[in-house]
Image 1 (cartoon, rainbow, N blue to C red):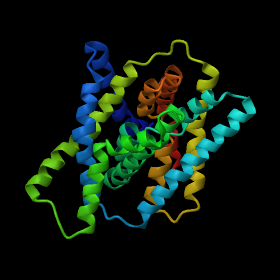
Image 2: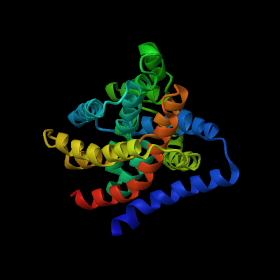
Image 3: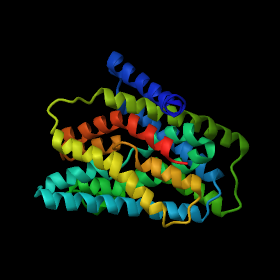
Image 4: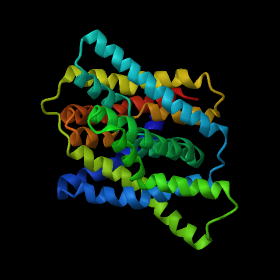
Length: 298
């Protein structure tokens, strides 16, 4: 109960504020998202990587992300084969389960649970997941209709990509940011996490339980909240990871389905109601599963 009150509840209250505002005023989520995507989040990414001591642990983080992704894809392909599911349904399952909400859900949870050091890892993983979603998420949403060119274009249209590139340039050279400009970056970065949390609450307010295929939703929620962290736990056992990073990766793997994937499902008309339903249900149930996981982890 202590973990729920001190770690999970503060995050839920911010989500609830976004939810309430959206129900009350019907704010344009797209407009608020632009501020987060093009201003606050790139500032946070630049700040994190500019100040980070990039070492071998970051390489293991990249390896972990791809191993987890491919493991979840294999799980879904196996389940689809056993169930005799169509290719379209298989793609929907992958969309709903292989891509986690490590940014506007996982990062604040990790901040409250593990402090600034764990949060730095969480932001790094968030950027990596954003890139993965813009490649593999687009592919499975479009299932080949958009092609590799669209995926590459999507990656290079992300402001966080350039924030990451500039931060790495500073890391690899003797250049440094002037203190007054870095102060501006720091101010904007502070707004990023609260803003994306509010946006998630607003997005949840637009989702409904109506006409959900509960059998498929239950399967996907189980994979996202239970199977994914179990696979993540297995992967980290074979890597010489910092114990804090290992916990951050496991918690990130246990977060609900990514809200960004809902936008892809809508854009490419790939079972948008199903994918948004999984996102909604997994977010609600994660209140319990994340609390239990934080109690179990050392």
